Length: 268
Image (cartoon, rainbow, N blue to C red; front, side):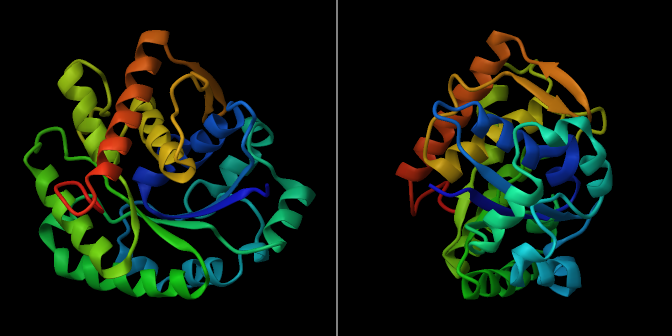
């Protein structure tokens, strides 16, 4: 089976703590290991509207092999220099060859974190435009349902509604990260998913997101996968208790989300 090839289009919620690489590290720890290639086009604070107008985004959708299996956009060069870049994700000649064999399997769309609440119409318009282009290139859009701000938990239903509407317009799948986030905090309100700005994810938050994406991409449980990961060139080891909580929350959220298609969490 060939490598799973994923393009991530987003902003800091996508590149923070090297989320796409975390997904690859989880995949590499599976038994048997899963081969995974990715590229990221992201910049701080940008929207799907920005991606609609960004030539790098359009070029990446058209030709995955043009730049190879690398992270790009904000922090891209740093990630390539990172010693961990030679770890669990394929790269170099073999990666270039695998990408030339076909286009993206999934393209992840992450809207700016408050846009679904403050301007859902614009989110849906631009997301639909990107979704059509993604489909035209033979890939499946995946919507990165983000979490509510720590001081605004009431945002979550509106986030879900916005992504549900966009899913209805595009036929996209959903990665219900924000719903898994809520599940974890209901189980353990002291779990440190947020940075001090009450918006960006800690390593724990990004690890949880990676577990949800792993479940979404592979329709497989992340329970039992590695709890030792590389982030920003440093090895991070989650406690067994924390890893179990995050992995189980991700899998339970994903399975209930899939079973609930067309209801509260569909597409969100």
